[in-house]
Length: 148
Image 1 (tube, rainbow, N blue to C red):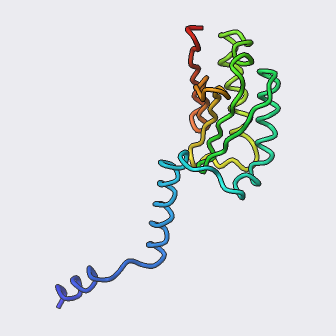
Image 2 (cartoon, rainbow, N blue to C red; image 1 turned 30 degrees about the horizontal axis):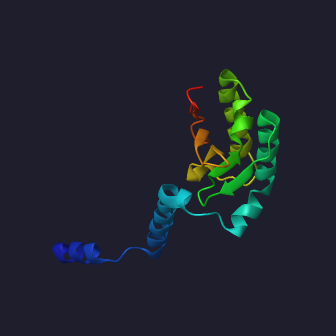
Image 3 (tube, helix red, strand yellow; image 1 turned 45 degrees about the vertical axis):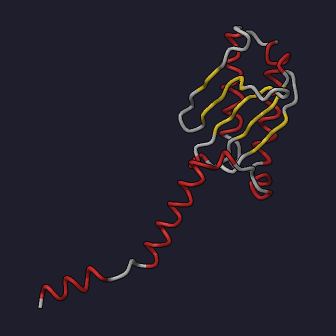
């Protein structure tokens, strides 16, 4: 009799709430893993409008250039500036500049840190990466351009 009850308990389907939670976790993981491959939708662009403005101001203050922004589904932003503007800042100061720009984006209203976003600074002609800032860990990466 006890064995029949234990078999019946094992055959019970998952609770619907448990299924919904598993689905939400799965969607979250897909966005984390593949979100940077997809452009952000209109809702994402509207919710991050303040963060975009902060980022534009930070780029202008650091590199004296206006950035073209490409916001992805995982809240990662790719900021495109000219190579001459990037090279006008000395190498030791580039790390500080990228960190300030990245913080401006990551601390902006509407950016969801749970999706592990980052800010990537790129050349507007070739798409070459200049550097990046990871929001979750605060890690800054600067790539030397032409050995400089």
